[in-house]
Image 1 (cartoon, rainbow, N blue to C red):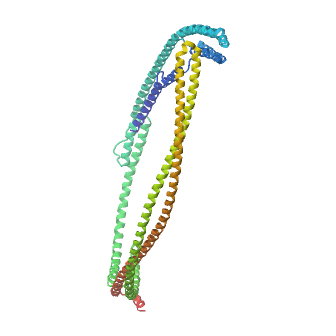
Image 2: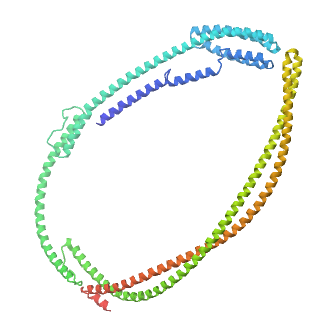
Image 3: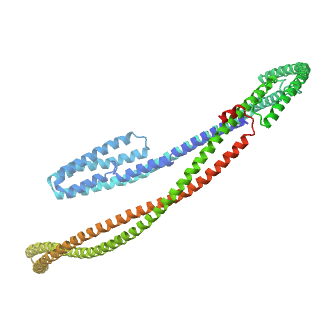
Length: 592
């Protein structure tokens, strides 16, 4: 079973290794997840950055340089950098392993690009440096013609490059499928080899060893009836079977010898056992008689007796234990007699003391009950005083809350007026801005009128519009001044209102402070009354607990008295029971 498990595990390991290898190849193959992510990254870079072999960025820089005459040197420097990038990438692709058609198209494109850069050096650069717009536009037209020819070639080259990529991908896929097929064949061969090896190992080793192990188990159980299996084999298994056969023969011979020896020993042992039993029966009979006599005397209450007759050696401990037990019982009963006498005397004293304690406890309970009633009346009076003080404090608190709300309303009014004042100032600032805008609009309209006058008949309509804009700006400025005057008057009124409301708020604040002082006094009175009521309540509770404890003590004293009387009776009965035993020395000690 274990070999089958080993073979299965080995086979599973090979299968897992092959599957992992196949999955890794599928994952890394061209067109797989890794290749797709790499291709997407390259495509993203190609979509973001302009390629060096494509003159699109150079053409864009040329057009920007024509529009910005002040940046001529920067434009030419940028074109020089783009040309260096083009030369570098062209040299790379001339040595790369690409198709002949692609190289031919690169050469065609290079002729157009060379003509493009020649125009840049000979015509465009001097025109840009001198700021000659006509020359620049003429050169750009020629450059666009070169660029269009170059772009047509690049479009064709792009199609050829995609064809190269597709061909490479197809070749890579074919290689991957070939590798996967080879891996599959190797895996099948390994699986077959493992299966054949495990089957052969099981047939030649595992099965014979299992049969030999089963035979040895039967030998260990005492079954020698069969010959060992595999005796005819000429390998290590056969040698093992021959050795087991030798063990079997020796075991059979040894079992026969042991059977005879065991029979002789059994007969000798039976004779010795019979003789020992007869001798032991006689000694046990004497021992039982002595033990029976001792137990009868012990049952009669004789604690002075001992067993002096010797017992057989194996029962000598029993005699010693009996004598020790009787002596221990005698000492214990003597101590019980002494303790019973002491308990009787003590119980009488406890009874007298308990009766006296009961009388005093009853007097104390009556006194505590009267004290508790008086404290209860005082506590009720103080609690009523505390309740009245609490109601007075609540009335003062409500008055203070009303005045506080009035003060808060006054503060809110002040805040609202301050907000109005702030808004008025902001409106003044806005009006100032409007006034400035009107002034600037007036100036712009004036300038527009002057420009319209210069333009003559063509600018007459624009001059009319400028005049209307000036009039509108003047009206805006006049309205802004009027609003500013009104806002200033409103701000002064708000400032007066803020001052009046502020004084009202201060007066209300003083009233709130006076109410606060009254409330503090009322709270102190109420707190003192509560503390007194609490203290008296605690005293009353303590007195009640003392009264309850005293009553419980009285009940316990009564129980103690009854228990002491009962204890006296029990001690007397115990003395009568102990008198049944013959103690000898213990009785003399008790009498003394």
